[in-house]
Image 1 (cartoon, rainbow, N blue to C red):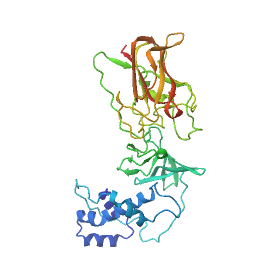
Image 2 (cartoon, one colour):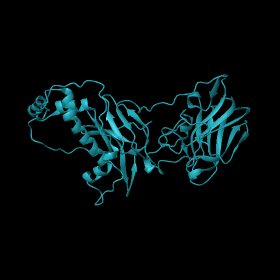
Image 3 (cartoon, rainbow, N blue to C red):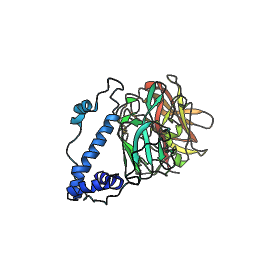
Image 4 (tube, one colour):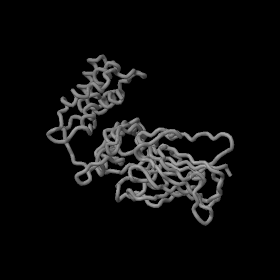
Length: 386
């Protein structure tokens, strides 16, 4: 980051002669310039950005000044510089294109999204996340836009596989992509502990993938997986009308992600009937008949903004399904598998095993769930590879 700050100073200054004199006063030593000049400027800018985006502060007369805020939080920041891995380089000082011209402002097109973090790529500005106002309320968003200064136009960023809605997060430009990380999770549910890399021009951000366990013994297949031909449907689904900008399509339960990394944005299913049961989510094997002897149901984890790989002993206390049935289609009706009527469940991953059944589809019928909604991250229907 310090090298980028030195480059910014050298290549965009409006007073090149003055900057050259300052560099000369520091013996044109890149290390000295980085520590004595670039670091204080960069730290000041980042700290003031934290202050501007600290959601704990209230707007209006009760909002503390920057100095008051800093006295309260400076202990949370480390004063020890990070170890320098590479030698700094001192670029040639170049005058900005408009150096010598008087300072001016010109209007720009309004931002078509919330005010979140912003990075400059060298050709455009990318703004992402933050708070958007809906009526008198505010909500976190997972949308963004790219601003072309030359054309004064905005282009929305991709939302497929974008990180969850948040504000007060960190965004950095790597030279080829924008890293979004951390911040305050949507609806004040805690701290987001994951992020993604956005590459302009690519179709989607790229979250770190969850590795698929290597099977042992007899080869097994998850027939519910969309990549294996599974197609999901549900009794009802939370709509955009209820929660604008969010996506709880049932297709999220067959994407192979057991954690629910993209919950609220296609990473799992949520029904539309608050407090009313039963609900169901169904996986059709595209008409093919398969032999199945195991179904696993993955509920939403308590810490869904920073989920861990679920184990069979991981418990939930907030959002999971507590009573459900695992059923299969016998050709004329739905039948509950042996041992498939589950009650008093508190496990994020509930695995049901049973004698092999031959079927073209399975479903999970939810009879009760915490929080009044059915929330399922993933459903797996496993059997011998055919």
